Amino acid sequence: MSGTEPRPVVLIVDDDLVSVRILQAALQQECEILCAPDGPAAIDIAMTSSPPPDLILLDVVLPGMDGYQVCHALKSERRTQAIPIIFITAMVAEENETRGLDLGAVDYITKPFSIPIVRARVKTHLQLKRQRDILTELSMVDGLTGVANRRWFDQALEREWRRAERAASPLAAVVVDIDLFKPYNDHYGHPQGDECLKQVAQALSQSVQRAADRVARYGGEEFAIILPDTSATGALRVATMMRQRVAALGLRHERSTVADHVTVSVGAASVVPTHGWSPSDLFAAADGCLYQAKADGRNRVRCLDLKSGQQLAE
Image (cartoon, rainbow, N blue to C red; front, side, top):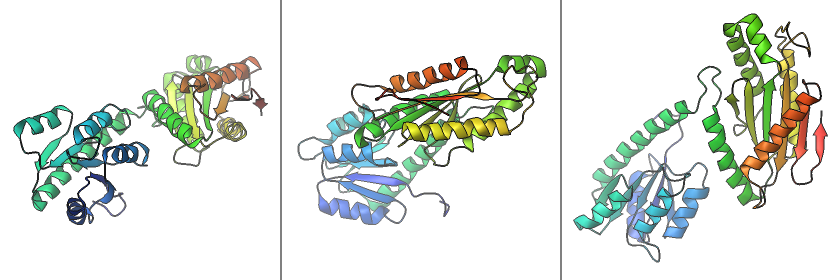
């Protein structure tokens, strides 16, 4: 593992402090260790920690909620279902192992366990997860522009909505559309149109500073951005910067009725998530603002505070 790569996070779930300490001592040089004494605590850590655990070592015999129930709960949630689970337990019967594997665990180790065996299996499953993560990340990237794709955006919006709901913090969405892109493509040709998309994507990406603020190509000439912890005022500021950066590219557009260069129209919306709203409501509000920006003449920014109904403009 390179010095710049973060260490994998392993969650140990066991109410036996002796086992926990042995496992912790065996793995702490290579991994960051989290511990939970019971099922509810394990689920809470897996659901809320950022980043989530890369691997879970789970005992079957736990107070209240047993390990099988914990495994089922984790495999039922999108945020945690891909986390590999290894049962480490004194339950040695074949039917116990079969049940654990049927629930989705990747391995089953019986107590008393061998430290070298635990280390080897943990290393193997962490490597496999890393490979899966790389493939997943590649599947979330738009092949032309290099920014995230719609699949990533849809999943990220759901994830950030849940996080913002727990934290009672604002979440904003921004939708950007290149003005009159079809006439641009028809006049300059598709290769130049592709180059335009790449440069616009880069300009939009340069307009956001935080790692969580990621640009996605939503489809065709439309881009979408998620802005966690961002009010309507903050979303308007970012959206305005995006419009200005694209204009500053100075990409000639002879077929535009808006300007002699490529421009974008931008819609944005923000809300503190509650049970009265949904992620689709937020996106629909941003998309509605985009429609308004186009109706008002294009090359404009419109924004909405979803809760108060206050409309903001550049």
